[in-house]
Image (cartoon, rainbow, N blue to C red; front, side, top):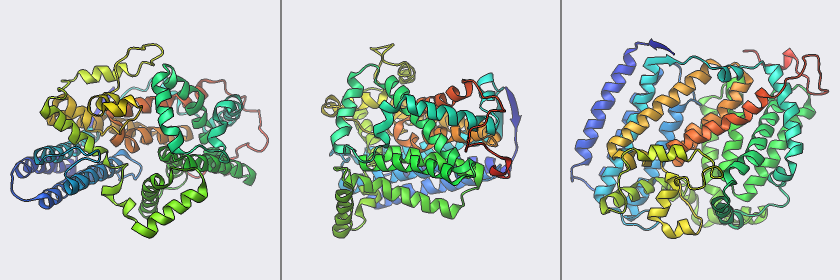
Length: 496
């Protein structure tokens, strides 16, 4: 491990100002002056103040990367926090009709501010005190020659597609798609009852689909032949269309992340203007799909969205109307539950139980419940028994462990660790394999983190590495071997 201290005034000033702002937050929010509007807008002002100071300090050491963890986590935590606050301030209850007191709301606001401050300070520390871990043999294997990686991924991608076709064919078959309403709940019940569900789902569907989509990305970006580009685009189109009709919006986001990240790092940087358009389209898509996913008929889905817009306008896209973003209300429910004695603080034991969750149930059948399932089991037992579940806000683990101090501590460690991981990828982004792998890491540690929990994000990130390890450790081709129609030339590679 190598340690290097980097000195820049921006970082120290940003940390000092954030510390003052967090202290001011406690003083202001703990007073009883002002109503709901003042309380909410004060929270927004303080959040944005810390966010601006953080980004300012962050940019003091390196250019701000649109696909880096800093802007993504800051924006997503803001959207989730504000949407939940807007809903509760307006109704006085969570979206599941539990009454929220003013005291709980104040605790919620302070926790969100502390969470942001924890992420910011952890990332700034990782920047200021740069730690370079010695690369092990596995990490070095990811820095594979682009041509070799292309040839291996194409060959094994095709082989895996053929071998696993009985398990993945329906995922690309947009002509026969069950709706979300028909499939979601039975699928959750199957996963809970079948001990090897997680292992089998990953091995039989997630792993092969990941490799196929990465192969399609390289076909579109790394070949000069139009037919190969069309094949790659057709693979993506079939998968996106199938899952759109099925209402699996999370899968769509994870799918488009692969080519977007690859294009940004290996072809051409996406500008801020284009990024803003992409984010707006994704936001509308994420909030529009629930309106129509009671069916999988494209005409009925279109009519449902058309009628919604005709009668109510774009109210489905408002922050307080987004079911996706209201996961922050679960933190309010936890705060109320702790105050009322429905549950107790874990005092860190949840970290151990979450580590045990990494063991497949087929090996450890009586392993502890993940915190996300434990939360539903305690606070919504009828939903849990019927197979339902809710998103797990990223501040819940820290608060459940040590209250508000736990929120800051857990998010500080998370911000530090995510920045360390990002810095390794940023140093090695000249390899196609690394760029494709980062798309999965970015999805796990940034895009899904706010509603999946911290330990769940780490687990997902580790699992996203396995498909690439499979390709890397499988035998390579002799350099003289040529695959007709997919042979790369130096002209097909972008200038770096």
